[in-house]
Image 1 (tube, each protein chain N blue to C red):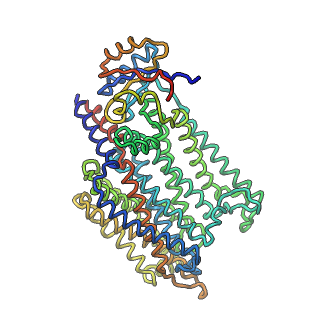
Image 2 (image 1 turned 120 degrees about the vertical axis):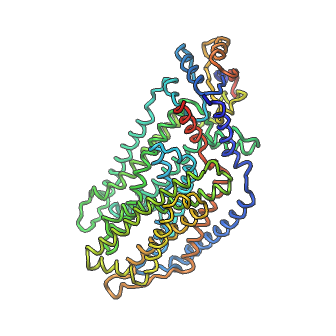
Amino acid sequence: MAKLEPAFLVAEFSEPEPMLEAAKRLREEGWRVELHTPFPVKGMKEALGFHDRVVPHAFLIGGIAGALSGFFIQAYANWAFPLDDGGRPLIAMPAFMLIIFELMVLGSVLTGLATMFVRNRLPRLHHPLFDAPRFHLASDDRFFVSLLLEGHSESEGRAQLGRMGAVSVSRVGGELPE
Amino acid sequence: MSEKPLTSRYQRITGEVVSIPPDFPAPLAWWIMFGVSMLFVGLLIVSIAMVFIYGVGIWGNNIPVGWGFPIANYIWWIAIGHAGTLISAMLLLMNENWRNSLNRFAEAMTLFAVTCGGLYPIVHLGRPWYFYWMVPYPSTMGVWPQFRSPLTWDFFAVLTYLLVSLCFWYIGIVPDLAAARDRAKKRRWQVFFGIFALGWRGSGRHWLRWRQAYWITAAIAVPLVVSVHSEISMLFAAGPIPGWQSTVFPPYFVMGAAFSGFAVVTMLAVMVRSLLKLKDLVTERHLDMLGRMVLATGLMTAFGYVTEVWTGAYAGSYELDTVLDRFAGPYAWSFWGAVFFNFVPLQLLWFRKIRVAPVPAFLIGLGIAVGMWMERYMLLVSTLYRDWLESSVHLFHATFWDWSLYLGFIGFFLAAFLLFVRFLPVISQFEIKEAIEEKASGEA
């Protein structure tokens, strides 16, 4: 049997500050909070309590792996098929550095960006939140807070959001996936 | 607090940018330009087919000028591409908000220019179907590329640069594609933008991770540009040939690349601004700043010319011979042409009035593109055509097929750019909004 999709409360704010404030308060009260904004708003990090350093580390690890593979590809090729170039050393570090650098960059960027997408669970073309009536404005000029309803009462959430200045609140999800 | 007018401004900015593809403001002008570009794309296809059928003998290339147009043009294209990365990445790291109106199409320019550039050496191979021999793969022949050769470095540098530029451009455009998807009325636009927006929903945690990734990529992209163009200069300078000094060339090439690229960005900015009627997003200030960048990098390039001549004079003998030959030899037109087109109209950019005037800015940019092409031609041909043995002297003359391939690639570049302008958000609207918000909260 297909699982029900999670249900969310989606609240619209017309300004970023009350949205951040609401997110912070609700998160402290134990809700699972997410923001949806047209651009990265200053203060998001604090409001969401975001401490994820996986993406920068992925860039670092990818870079190291890329650089090492750059070196070993060249070293191995020169051992396997020695091309004597005017008696110069086979493992010629100055000549190898450029490819090592390029593969470091490539490894770093591809690993970092792939990690970013995986951690963000993207691509995911449909999400229950897109059913919220005015959610398309999240990429335009409105600021949204979404709350995961699991284990919380909907009416309490609505009341809280209303008190914190939400312009509108709606409930989405909780149905079978299409 | 002045929040109310702010949000209405956001709405207007979104509308201005993302409504361009579904509701294109200048369809007729677009079709005319696109049609002309496609004619040149046709010429490109014919020219490449001719090379594949008859071989590189249809070009002016000879021995000793084995490189001729393809490599000179290859460098010209890649160099143009670099400015897109520099504008986008360097100015992002420096928190220069004026980049936000320019970075998207400058990066698109990078992609198309690098594509044109990257195809040149492959077409030039003579047996292009063996181009994958540059890849170090375990082949049954048991041979590997010569990793101590700049030609192999080149393959890695350009491939990395193309992929990194593509990634950087794409993750930058995803949030704007989402905005375009959310605004689109017609089904086909919703599907088109929806697929490429990857389901972006402006989620806070997504933004934070996105920002980490975007900034680190930018920070890596800047040294990458320097490495790529230094490496390209090594194609020339790693060999002991008079006229190609390995100490001068890398910085000289990187500066020249930025210079020619900023000139082309200026031309494209003028075009985008008037074609799409975006005069309040690409403002006089942007033209002004671009003009300053062109002027600054141009003066640095001029310094490179002086250093190069000085180094030749200081070294004497063969080096000096080459310098004097550039001054007064058979290719003196390319040397003096480069000096003239690069540095004489450039001096007009000292005046703000000229920098902010679209037509003069465009013409100066065009002059620089021509001048920098002459520079590459001069550096390549005047060095190669004449060795110090009578048997190794052979003048180079471009043929029709040299020119047709070059014009074809220009047409391809324009056609690709026009398609980009027609179908994708040309301006990073979310970054403009972010900058406005930050400015407002800074004042409040």
